Length: 442
Ligand SMILES: Cc1cc2nc3c(=O)[nH]c(=O)nc-3n(C[C@H](O)[C@H](O)[C@H](O)COP(=O)(O)OP(=O)(O)OC[C@H]3O[C@@H](n4cnc5c(N)ncnc54)[C@H](O)[C@@H]3O)c2cc1C
Image (cartoon, rainbow, N blue to C red; front, side):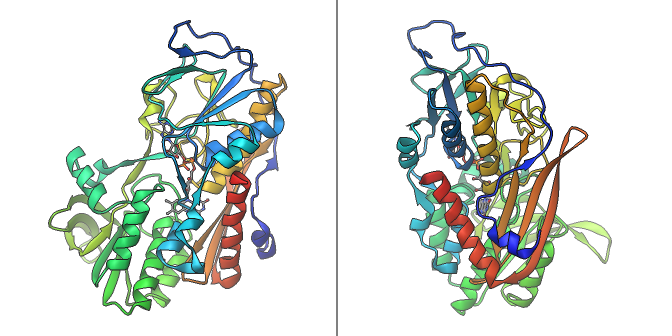
């Protein structure tokens, strides 16, 4: 793939591999009859838990292939606030506005004939084929779980009370909504000193996002001529992705504004006294030493985990709690009527990104459409692809692409890096974002 192809990638999706298994058409009348259950009537019913990038894409794409089923999307938030493009708003890049992040799912819901139920799902009963909210139980024919991520502060040594304090004082802004408003205010009101950004341990959503955020916050402080430093505490030896591009930007554009501290394993955060304790490798003594970093303000991004809803429901998960699916499909490893898509999946070496969630959602929507029509869903015939742009200044960006492919029945990923920052990639960042959101919310 050359740079022209990369710039053309807006909403890219599929490549062809081998046909695989055939999922049986689900029956639609297996729930035990209780008055409280909202039962499947004369139409098959698909329930989608989570109205984020993955869930809404699946809803639309089922409808593009099948017209008769009932589709219900359960989503507790009543406003879609995007994480992609939020760093640009924080750093005032490409004239991004908060409005650019906000969308209503009711528009596509009316166009593509699905319903948005503004409620949280609190349990799944696989045996009865039902899901429950606080006050109702709904039967499904097919269930899609697309609940994204939850935060896990325990890896920073914080118990539940301290985790809540940390989330209030130093919001992660790793999901959309009020955390974004708080972080923006922090950045705007910062008077100078040390502003810490932490990179999560383990698998987390949007691997480049903490580094992109650091670059754009530093750019903002630099433009304001603040006597300020963004300190990045990273448990890894180098940035998780696009390391060359990010380190080059930190060294050249933000020499006096960014301090990158690799191999920094946070063990505690004293939220009141604004101090982070971490272990780091000392090259002179060749041993790990304990250090304390005092800060003036912070954006503490904790580890990510899949929602406990899936493990509590008895769905197969890996040792880190991410969902397991039957390769090369999105079908649960232990329930053929349940599909999992987006950031919650831990089976494949896919980065957790909106583009990957969207590309996977397009494929899964088509497969479910075929199942509903009694056709072969042809799992593995199409596999998802990703492009992920990162701004390193207000007007330049770098990128990476991922293409999933099948090798001996295993899903693998080919990665290509574009790490020389330029304006054309920044323009592509904007086109990509407005392309994907238009595709979902048109
Ligand atoms: C700062 C930042 C920048 C990013 N930039 C990019 C980028 O440039 N490009 C890119 O491709 N990706 C980017 N991402 C990653 C992207 O945001 C995620 O990968 C994407 O949102 C994943 O989609 P999802 O549908 O799996 O999860 P989400 O979009 O988070 O959707 C999950 C939804 O499920 C709902 N939910 C959770 N539990 C329940 C429940 N029990 N009942 C009902 N609903 C529930 C949640 O409220 C949420 O709306 C970025 C992320 C961050 C944090």
